[in-house]
Length: 88
Image (tube, rainbow, N blue to C red; front, top):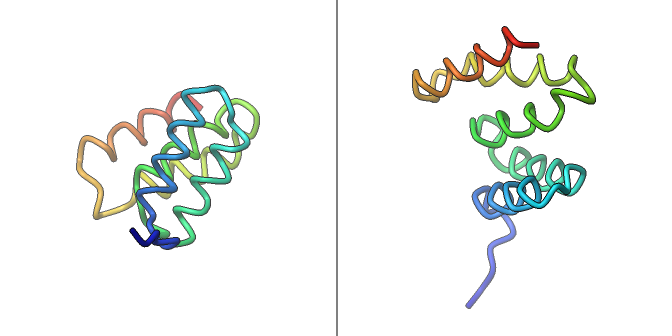
């Protein structure tokens, strides 16, 4: 089997695993790699904003705004991003 280093989903999934295990820094790196491959990938943007929301609220606001304005994201996902903007 050949591995694909340009698989945004693999990096995203790795980021989610890191989030679940409390490894925020490693999660951020994995999510950023996902976004290098696919800059408009809503789930990676949203989860990166989630990580940043307490320690770096300004960056989180920027990311949630980006996620909320993605026309390719579902209405429900965009609404979640707008809701989190309201909280911040």
